[in-house]
Image (cartoon, rainbow, N blue to C red; front, side, top):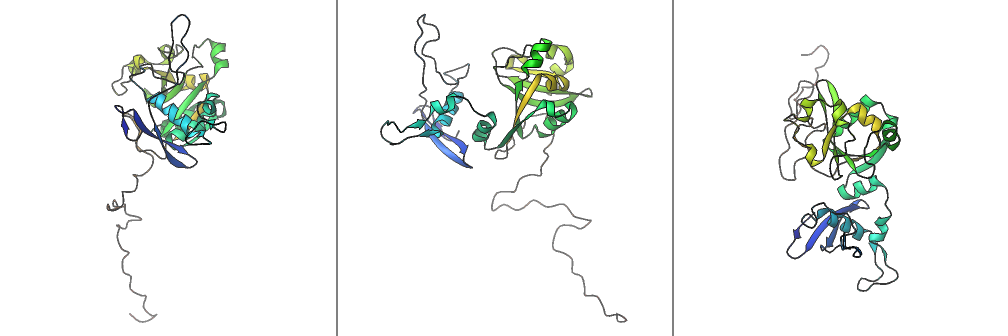
Amino acid sequence: FLPWNPRRSVYIARIFKHGTWMRVELDDFVPVGAPSQDGDDGNVPICCRSEFFPYVLWPSLAEKAYAKVHTLRGDGLEITEDDRGGWESISGGGRVEEALADLTGGVAGRFHTCDVAMDRLFLYIYELQRDTLFVCRVHQTNCDLFGVKLNPYYPYVVNRACVYEGKPYIQIFSGAIGVFDGGLQDINVPHGLLHCEDYPETSAEGFFWVSAMDFHEYFDTIFECRLVNSGDVSIPGMPPPRMPPPMPPPGEPMPPLPGVAGFLPGPPPTVPPPGVAGMP
């Protein structure tokens, strides 16, 4: 979000669409459903919402901004039959990687865990975790086969990957209410990792650990989004950056470059012209 004013109900979000950032101005009014007959769950927003709604509004506002970007109006002043898009255009779902790219300005794609070996999958996530989002889809067939109760209707996101006592583990965040780890955290995750001070996330906050082998077995599709248009979004405990530091802003001096082939940075040395054969 860009500038906002909750007292005036004015917010400005930015969405990356068609290769450029678009500013979207919106208020905090969201559509609600009809009241139920028994009085339960009446007049609640039909858009996505936080469990702390209305005190936490940003999920609903982000979806409203995304719907507004996909709105086409025939007349800017009145509602006409030529109006298209809006909430209806995003109500049918779509491709997760496209939404990730639109919301972050990154480069997104998808792959399947069955197409890569377990150890290579862990190394891939471990090396890219600092600047890449990984959203996971449950492998429902394997979960049903082995009795693992991962809920396929809630999102799962990789929070971090690490090596503990010589073995690879992946920490996942679940958007479900409660803990939906399918019992995987109680099987192959050591007690010391769950209470390690370097990883302060807890199960009460929706985080749980799985081994890299269980991750490869019980998750099917991985949606990745490389945050090429974002700054450093890493959290403590992640590996150092893979890329060199970014270019300084205009007007600031360039950082010194390391020497190349034993020479110090600077202008090239002056070499006298070679002498004529037989002459000094």
